[in-house]
Each structure stands twice: as C-alpha cells, then as structure tokens.
Length: 51
Image 1 (cartoon, rainbow, N blue to C red):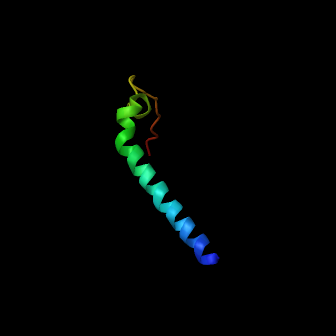
Image 2 (image 1 turned 90 degrees about the horizontal axis):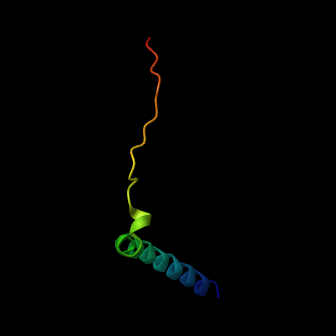
Image 3 (image 1 turned 60 degrees about the vertical axis):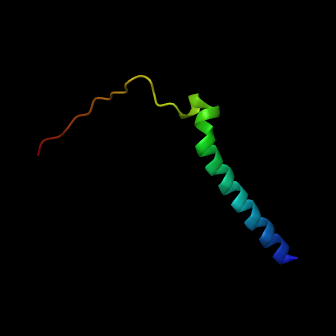
C-alpha cells in the first residue's frame, strides 16, 4: 500500500516536471504576451553615498 503511494507521488513529480519543461518550450508560441519582455524602459533614481 505504501509502495503504491510512493510510486504515485514519483509519477506525479515526473509528470509535473515534464509539464513545466513543455510549458517553457511551447509557452512562448501559445502565450507570447506572458513571455514578452517589458516594452517600456524602467528607470529609478538612486543616491550613492560617498565615504
């Protein structure tokens, strides 16, 4: 009984890993807006202290 649970969890981990890899490769083709870089520049002023 416990061995079945371990095998099931191992199978779920492997399948979720494969799904993540598939999403990383196929995702930009199906969902380009999710993977797009920001289209406007982001700037933030900083103050450097001089010692």
